[in-house]
Amino acid sequence: STRPVGWARVFLNGFGLSGMHGNVMEWCQDKWHASYDGAPADASARMSNERSASADRVVRGGSWSDHASRCRSAFRTKLHPRSQPPTVGLRVVMDGA
Image (cartoon, rainbow, N blue to C red):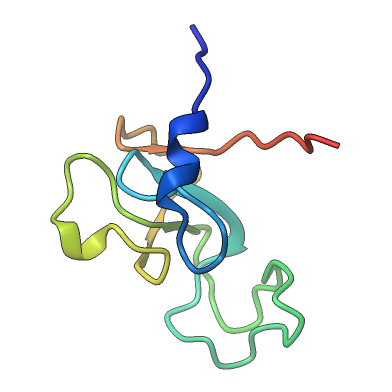
């Protein structure tokens, strides 16, 4: 079921967002690379595989089962696309306009 989350507006971060960390880690479109060297300057998804033979994708943030230090957008790790851990999901966003 769904429910309103208007209460979260009270706890906005510096980007005007709330409730973004600590639920589940989030799948990203980017293919895994150990460093940011060669990443697109415009912050678009890094899809090329020139420096990585891995099929792994990036997941970001922390989940309810992680230490608090991982519950931040800067934390990232890799998972195989067929992985289905209960601590990883995706965020569905709808433009309210």
